Image (cartoon, rainbow, N blue to C red):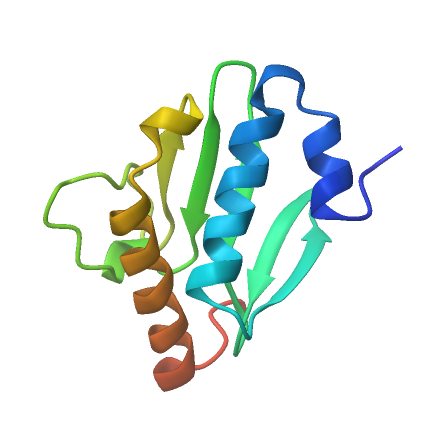
Length: 120
């Protein structure tokens, strides 16, 4: 059965439960007006369209951005090669680059507000 809330999603992630919860809290803090939901069997945050998602894997958790290729990334944290999406891989709570992620989240929301919904 698929998760209905981010907390429910986190509870199914074993050793990465705390990473999921910490990343979700960071997104909520950086984008307090965003809508939080479960779409495509993973947490998704939307404001003027989806801007950020989270996906837990066996050895890490990705926090991804719909317009990741457009984000300013001076430290080179974003991974991916597609035309639009990029993600940051997180292996533990202590490895969360909080300041950089907050910056990406704020940039992503601003891009959605100026360019519209990236999923359309």
